[in-house]
Length: 373
Ligand SMILES: *Cc1c(COP(=O)(O)O)cnc(C)c1O
Figure 1 (cartoon, rainbow, N blue to C red):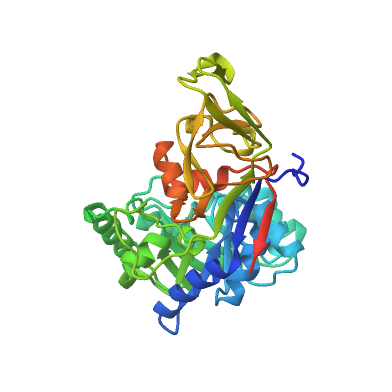
Figure 2: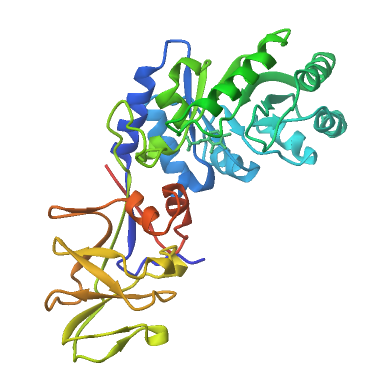
């Protein structure tokens, strides 16, 4: 998708906010622990390489991504720090990962034996492996300590192909005020670890929520994602130990503004009809930009005032009801502050009945990211 550079709709990314959030978290870690910034999905929509750079400046020492191509993007951009692919990569790409020094998540001995064949043939170096343990997330990873032991033995027997670099798990409810299930998972984790003959370099269990609210469990590495972008992982149910500063904003401008008589309809389906003479403004953003159609009836900010989105949101444009006449070119804030009004990513997510993660990474490539500070 082409980036709309000649249109006033932009996502602003405040790199100082990212540094602030990471700085605070790094300060809470003990001397032997590291923070790897999670920059999957184009840095949760913020721009992977730009976020990675800001994260390093603030004390991060490595990165996590979801798919191999995201790791390759960082390597191609010149990042030499450790990178862990959190998802399962097809074993065929093990040599490529070894060659580019990208660490693989492994959840079965079968994966290792399949990768082994490719690694032996290609001889492009040793593959760094992090074993993923399924302690209750039910997504990927070893199910039992016995399965894990088999895999560790296999690694020990094939040290020319593999390096046992890390072991980890992932919590399903670390952002929940009720920690019952978290404790169940942590007990399973301890059960796995008790049966491990030797520990690898990195032992990690923490996403943002775990590190913010269960820091005692951390191990020696955290996988810090959403909180680094300044978003509260719990959505507001639990307060973080320091103030998170949101990095992403969304702004545009009116491209059109008109006075309409009472009884005129606005937008597809004619779902909104003016009940009195009104000023209607048009904003150049729509669902093709990731500004969801479900946001009809939500607000944007113009001149420090909340203005309702009226009529259906189109693919590329939406209409708002203005309190008075405003010229084309007038700034419109969709996420951020104007005067004493603020619309947060969480406000948008709440209106869409989803989580802010989905909103942030849902903005498409058509919206240019503009970096500040
Ligand atoms: C996405 C992800 C993270 C980061 O989670 P946040 O809630 O954004 O901190 C950490 N670990 C794994 C395995 C993930 O998939």
